[in-house]
Amino acid sequence: MAALAATAATLVVFVDSTHEPKPATVSSTPSAAGTPFAYSPAMSGADLLRAIAAQIVDSPADHTTGRYTAIVAEQWARATHEIRPAQIHSWHNTARRYPPSAHETRVKGPAIPLSTFRLSPDLRAVWAGHQLRTEDIPDATPIAEIALSGTDDPAADLRSQLYSWSYPASDPVHLDELYTLFRNQLVPTRLRAAVLLLLAELPRWTHHQATDLAGRTGIAFEMISDQGQDRQVLLIDPHTGQLLAYERWWQTKHWLNEYTMITAVSRCAADGCAAGSPSTPPSLRSARPAPASAVRPSARTREPRWTTGVDARRRQQRRRTAGPRRPGQPPSRGSDPRPTAST
Image (spheres, rainbow, N blue to C red):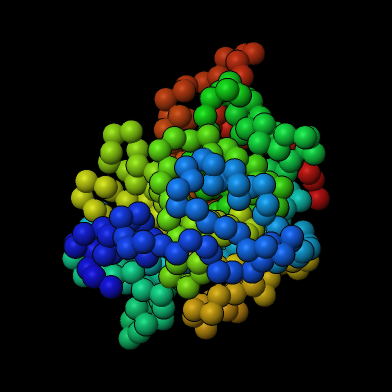
């Protein structure tokens, strides 16, 4: 794979819709009706997202049970002029938020200069011969999970939960916050459909078929910001509606800001889950969170440790600029007024 300093089209596993013509159909598991999903390059991005939302089926994660949610991800994130790859295992108790009930383990290797960086499907090969370090975060505070209330309009239900305490329900959603849902929780089938319907409301989508670093095929939906500086790509499984991977590029410099692959999601009854990734290093395969009873509450509420990217920075900025809340003033968008269940 060509170096990052080359053109964006040669760098990324999925982004450029000007690549050679794509086949007309996606070859993968048939839908519940027994018919493979038909991909049409001529459809608009919004229409294609709505078509996927209308016929998605359950994913394997939808049939797992337990009070804990486990998420495994591989992430390549830029820090100034370096790329820092990491493998992330995170668990949290879905039944409570306070005291802190989340646990995260990150395995990191050496940073890679942008001039020599290449995306690789095997982090073990990238890290071969290098000393790895493990960051253990045992007392993170997760965002409360969103669950739909069962109305006839799941998209309106989701929009209401995201924005009713802050912005009018007529405002468009932000792509970052919908991506963060997949990064922070197990997203059931009906909620995935609602996310796709809200994504369809955003403008300027282009799309093409693509494959992520793990070899999974999906449809890449790409959007460039109003200013033309930021490019974001979501790789969606057209059968389940699950987010497979996410990319964010600094368009003017052709620099990768983030590439995140969600490789496993499941629920489990114990403090640790057996969910793993084929490329997970041995040191991470056995990583398990501390029992909830052994986790000490933090002295103060902290930003969720695995809330990623612009979403987290935007909330921090609002807190710095909003000032103290006056009596009777509704909470700001950076707060989280959603009720959570107790243990």
